[in-house]
Length: 333
Image 1: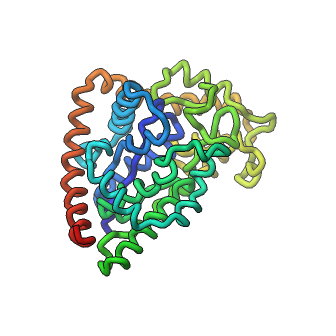
Image 2: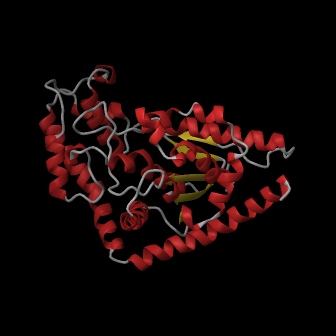
Image 3: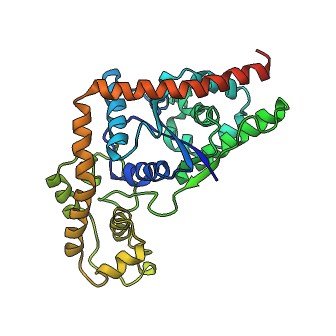
């Protein structure tokens, strides 16, 4: 059965191994399935829910696009574009915000986590950005959306908005309620310094993450210093239950080597972490260094990156603008 896939990544700069394993690697796999039509978006409208430096934002948009291409996304097979270049996203977001309900947004746990105790000082955009996310998806009649567990609630909101719109305007199945594609294994890569915290660019310690543009020496150094425990590598997965750092490193190895976790455990069971870390560092270098080199190469040709985004926006715009016209007709504009 053919699928229409939509997903987006915020241009926050310094994409890291967690972004690659948790999202981009999966994007490439989905693209390479001939049954899928994939649309991948650099979601810069989402990025400005918190204050951005204009110059830095422009740089990050290009860097995220370069990371997409360097990782294997093909702008000829898939649509790769910049969200703000397709005005239908903003227009659709407003229309759908008149369909969504306050009670639905008040249940969104991610806003509570990001806004914290100072939610009165958070931007309105941060509060309503799940509606923009719904517009992103629904404008393209996406049937499936790859999401992490932290975004699953937002996808449920998109489904609720689609169903309510269809019901309110007696337009059965006009907006497609999308299904989640949740990566079951290794969807969350954790910090190299704390196995209970997600790998993040906001962590003050650069040693907590492998950046996609790290050099070979930086990768070896970070893996060498990665936190582990004093016990040897276990005999089975059950023995990893209370060893988050060990589980994280073994998971990274498994994912990059395209093998189940139990195979990695069988390979290294009983060995100490110094031996495993050498193998892991070499594997990370083998997989990430070519991406890093390609990112740096692409960033030297800003005109090429901008052309990819412009061409992608033109293709995306044709789809999204037709949907907006149909929405307007349905609601009486």
